Image 1 (tube, rainbow, N blue to C red):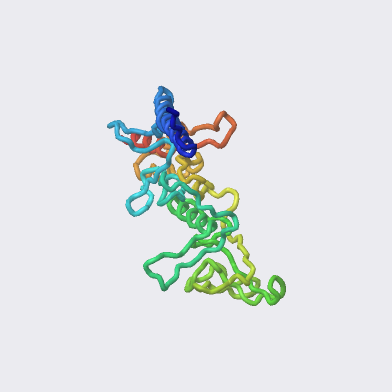
Image 2 (cartoon, rainbow, N blue to C red; image 1 turned 90 degrees about the vertical axis):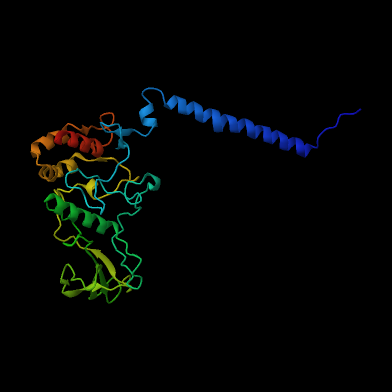
Length: 298
């Protein structure tokens, strides 16, 4: 009796199904279990599990590889702790929303909130205004001069829209401070003899020439370092520069009633050098610094 062969189409599907089962077992079960087992070996386990940091009671208080906020329930910095750098990940250091602001050097014009939509905030700060506002806030908090170039005294980007009779040439006919919404008083009264106006929501100022004004802000020598006013690319950077850590010493010492010299040594002892001795810059892990601070204050 002749053997019955399955149609070629059925044989092909069965072969594909067997290959799917084999690859599922190998790549979906065996390989992940192998890698998980290797990751739990001594010396690798801590990093594989997220570099978790525990307190004396064994409770997880964070990760040495992911930054966190040291703020109160209103988002205000807690004075007795060293602060992390800004974060664009979600509401700040959200591992599920790791991201950057994607704003570049040309982001210097703000968007105002629509007064007709009171329940929704549609305003959007430019990178320049974000840096200005953060530097001013840190300067006020730490008791230093946080003014930066191209920033107004109120902490927004000092940018004008200059209108001329011939587009980019000819006499100036109108000047608008485009980041200061009316009824604000512009940061400068006149520009080349023309009165400076505040900006009105919904008005189009694109026909003017955008002119950043350097203003009175400090350039080199500004005590507020760049990492204090800019977010990292991931939004999860757990480290700050030694300069930013030292800037916070006096405020933290005052809040805890400690000698600033003690905290200065605490920061110095927790500076991590450049990777391999030459890559990157020295850093200070904020969580580890604050844990050491709590231990010192006991």
